[in-house]
Length: 90
Image 1: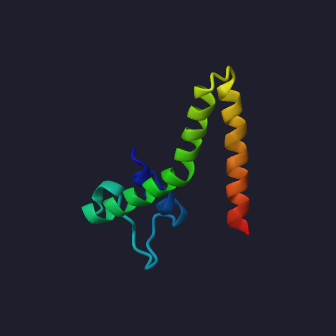
Image 2: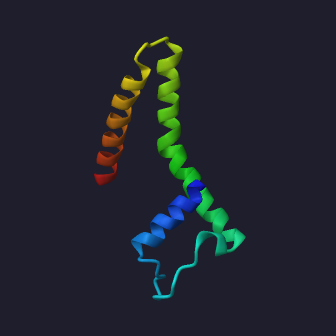
């Protein structure tokens, strides 16, 4: 499953699989190529905002030979998400 499909299906679930006009929303594969590409772009944006900074933090910790990179990464992830959510709320 791609990031775009995950995003689309989350949207559909939040809308109870109904469009704003009350029509049934189709499965991701049944959407036009143009619409699937748009959802993939949205998924890529989410990845760029959240996943890539976390991956960079993990590699930074690992490259310094830090023996407990996984635990440190978990703490960094929690802090990053908390900070991002508080920024979004304000």
